[in-house]
Image (cartoon, rainbow, N blue to C red; front, side, top):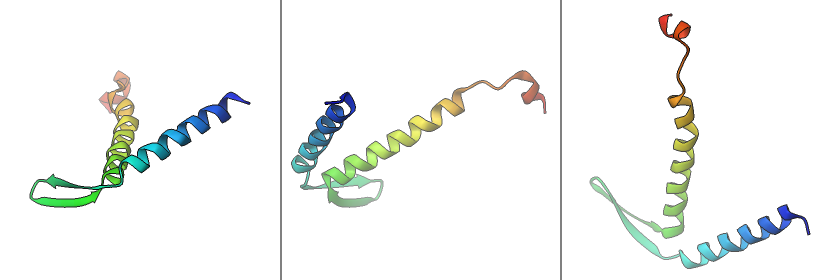
Length: 71
């Protein structure tokens, strides 16, 4: 088998195990609100926020050349 197929199968099985183990509801307090949602959904939200921040940070941390700063 090709390495991509093996990696895809392993990741798929791992994701399936994580979903099965995290179906219970959890209460989450955010400032003044209390939200009850499935644990897997909360994990997905945190993962998505992490990806968004990870994609934005390199663009924010690059230094602009001095010529662009003067304009």
